[in-house]
Amino acid sequence: MSPRAAQKSAASKRAASKKHHEPANTQGSGEFAAMLDESFGKAGRLEGQVIKGKVLSIENDFVLVDVGLKSEGRIALREFTMGGVAAELKAGDTVEVFLERMEDRNGEAMLSREKAKREESWTVLQESFDKGAHVTGTIDGRVKGGFTVNLNGAMAFLPGSQVDIRPVKDITPLMGTPQPFQILKMDRTRGNIVVSRRAVLEESRAEARTELVANLKEGQILTGVVKNITDYGAFVDLGGVDGLLHVTDIAWKRINHPSETLHIGQQVQVQVIRFNPETHRISLGMKQLESDPWEGIAAKYPASMRLKGRVTNITDYGAFVELEPGIEGLVHVSEMSWTKKNVHPGKIVSTSQEVEVMVLDIDMQKRRISLGIKQCVENPWEQFKHSHTVGDTLSGEIRNITEFGLFVGLPGDIDGMVHMSDIAWDKQGEDAIKDYQKGQNVTVKVLDIDAAKERIGLGIKQMTPDPFEGVAVSFKKGDVVTCTVSTIVENGIEVTLGDQGQGFTGFIKRGDLARERSEQKPDRFAVGEKVDAKITNIDKGTRKVTLSIKAREVEEEKQAMAEYGSSDSGASLGDILGAAIKKAGQKKAE
Image 1: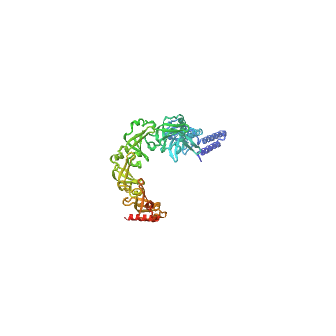
Image 2 (image 1 turned 180 degrees about the vertical axis):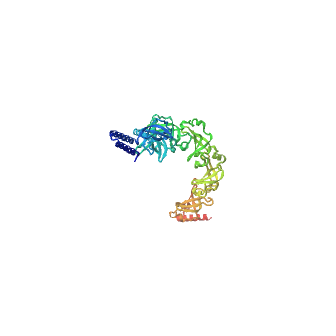
Image 3 (image 1 turned 90 degrees about the vertical axis):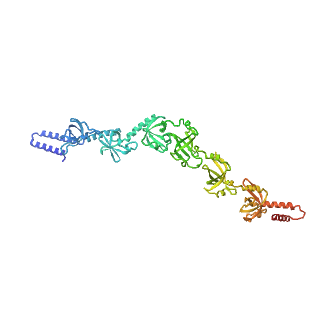
């Protein structure tokens, strides 16, 4: 039986006993019983309610409170603490407490100040939730998936995603500090409250964004926080609205990636470069807040000036060299070396290397400085021109072989070229190239020097006399010569002109192999066979000698007709030709 029921039972028994012994006073007995029942009923209704009590005394960290019941209750002094500060209590003060039970096992009322505060908080929180108003609380602990928030005695849950607009790595600075929250969900029967700090911040951002956009102007200087970093720049939170800080507007000097200068969460001062009120796109700049290093740069770095700089970046087309902070020039790959052609710039210079350069040109409008490295050393082509002349004989190694000739190494680490037509007198270029290998040493003659175009023409065949000159001297067009068949092809035969021609070759076309068409067959000749042919053409340009057996036979026939045709002997044409051929044979025998 509960203490309340026991008290009621005992009171009923006492009332019944009194009625038995005092039968005359029946009306007074009934009134007393009614009053007793009313008293117990009222007290029973107070359980689970917040009631007012008076502080009787404070003893040994406990507060003795009288709430007008049969017995007083004790409440731990710590329950009266507010925000970590002990309450200033004294006897006689009126306090609100929560009545849990009429009596405990010690016969005292069970009271709680914390539950009273919680009930008060729930009432206030419910009103704020219904109105959509903010509430103040303190983050005081970490739980799975979020944090606990003390809302003036009522405990609420703060999800991790609702702490801030951006992810927060360390929440320690926020703990223990009173802050505004928005109640997202509230269930009093289950005692569940879900709050959000992010919703409050977003409201503030929305108000700040509206005000900021309304007053935003180009040229305005603002303070923001780096929100995100990409390859092309950084997004800066200006307090409710984001702006793009392009990588080229971070600093006057070259920056390959924004992370070299900025980091997320960093506070920066920026200037509004461009602002589109319709799209709300904002372009920001940091370097615009510093003095422009390009001012007066043309006078500072005149053309032909030599100075040292540091290589900051290497590309396929050249290397960028920093002359001073914010000032860079480009050394194009063609201006890097006099001798290293078609080589990647990374094989000539390296990043962070200090190099000597010469200023070639400055374009202030495009903010470009053209630099050269090779101009800081002597031009080996000019040096070669001053130390050598056309006709000089040199020796060098074949460095490269191409389809149009040989490249030979020369003094000064430069190359000269032997064109395929200058390799051999008696071979075509493609055939002549096959006789040489890379790394082979050859002797060459200087044919031409063009320092401006960096070209030096060389020749190998010029090291020996031109055999065609012997042909031009020993033979002339119309001469009949004895040749030796060297090659037989489908459209004719190739012949060697003999000792006087120094082995020079000529060609007899198929149609010139005989007077009679039936005899114009290349395969009727044999390699090594000697034939007589008439020189029909000597072309010095193409260095070709053309011969004809047919022309020789026709000429011999004409001579025979001229010599024997006027005779009155009555000889036939066959007799005349036979005599002419016999005579020609006798002369050859002689």
